[in-house]
Image 1 (cartoon, helix red, strand yellow):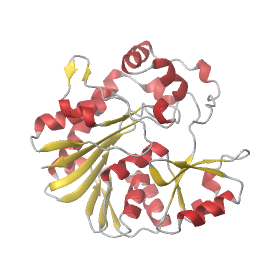
Image 2 (image 1 turned 30 degrees about the vertical axis):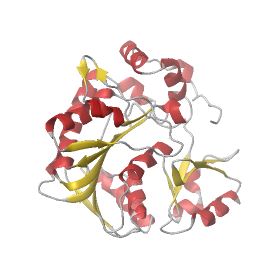
Image 3 (image 1 turned 180 degrees about the vertical axis):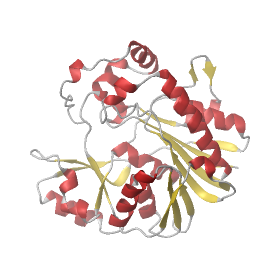
Image 4 (image 1 turned 180 degrees about the horizontal axis):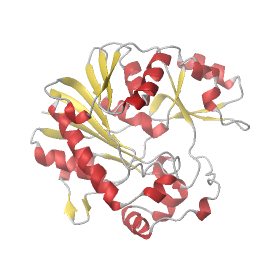
Length: 316
């Protein structure tokens, strides 16, 4: 891994005692703190709908940028320049040939693995990084319903779809809980969350964190995962993901679904080069369903990425 570069004034950041206590129980606190307060490596995904990987790599490298492959995503690269950080100003970005996307964010679509011709729901789609990734995986065929619940967020989603040259996607505006009697082959629920895996991208997460917020989010996430499962075809598959590392938002939500539906099955997935941590099987006196052992828990220190949680579920 590349040498960590601490965020400016990181040594002055104050974590709440309850936060430190919680994360000292869940992981190696010193490592988690060090990575959370270090700069996040920039990464891109090449849009093969518009150009080949080789073509775009050559074009970017000729401008003096270094590209290092992301092991679990063949279109993904960490990107570095000794004198520049403005990846978004690259001409290839304006052309839609690349999408600036965090390396761990590429994992949920890869786990869901949508195919050309399938009908897919992206329940919480904006700003569209995973939507556009899935549309490319589907070779711009089939249908994605890209939904979000805030109108203001749909603008960025529409712009990103347009810039990426994708036409197999329609955009909808409603709460994910309001889907009823639809049938999708595959569903992605990248749920709104506390973002505790993304501290290194948003330091304000440290100050706004509180257990009450976590409990409120977990209730919303349970509603979303149930709605998604109910709108999944028999034999269909869904992915539940968050950029949180809180057990209540992750293993706890999957446990809730498994207890509610006998025909829900967790599917174990491995991606090449991706280091996974052990699942949290019990938290605050609550023991989770044994199937929770097969979810994907990713701490920032595992792969020098954001923290992430991903679980694939099949409807039998």
